[in-house]
Image (cartoon, rainbow, N blue to C red; front, side):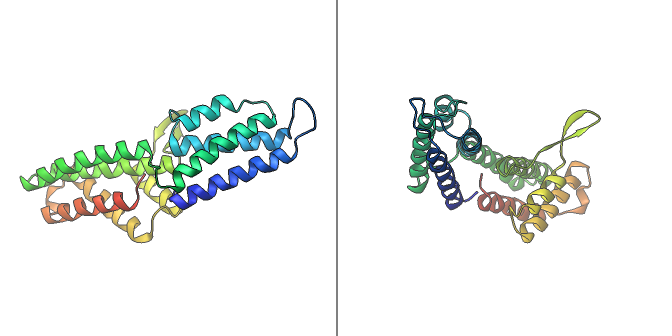
Amino acid sequence: MKIEDLSKRIDELISMADNVLITTTNTVLRTVNLEGYNSFRTASLSFLKNTFGETHPYYENFNVGVRAIASAAYVEIGRGILKAAKDEIDKGWFVTVRGIVSAEIFSDFLEMADYLLLEGYKDAAAVMIGSVLEEHLRQLCKKHDVHIEIIKNGKNKPKKAEQLKSELAGKSVYNIVDQQNVTAWLALRNKAAHGKYNEYTIKQVELMHQGVKDFISRNAL
């Protein structure tokens, strides 16, 4: 999700808070409409969790401070937390910890793949680059609320990269050109993983390496 989309969503949540506060009864308890309150609280917790993570102070403070009681006081606390989060995003201070950690890990593996290519080990490099790509697809799925598992024979099983790729494209997370490139890269990785070493060249792996780096940069977490 782009920064402007995050800011817009917080504005919507703050508006939800304002609408809930309008329903405040003139009593000592200052109760508010229960349905509106629950919608505001649930939507806000979901946003803060997906954007900042469960260990971030914004999520933790909201989860603890905005209790499951329809009170105007709790709405005001939640609105204050959302305004602080919006200020951080609007001023460019926001980056997701998940994105930073993933970027560092992916960078390390891609550097290792670069070394393997320089040494002529195209097959190992192709598998490593493909693994980075698949994990990035999974992280993108988590970011965009795409399930990464399916229930089969009563058990949760991870979806294959091809399915993740298609579902992300279906949600317009990336364009058709990226989708086609991802398809080609996954196919190359599968050839390397299954010993079909003569069906691709080191030059193709080098292009895959640069392409995956660019793809990750364009589709950041």
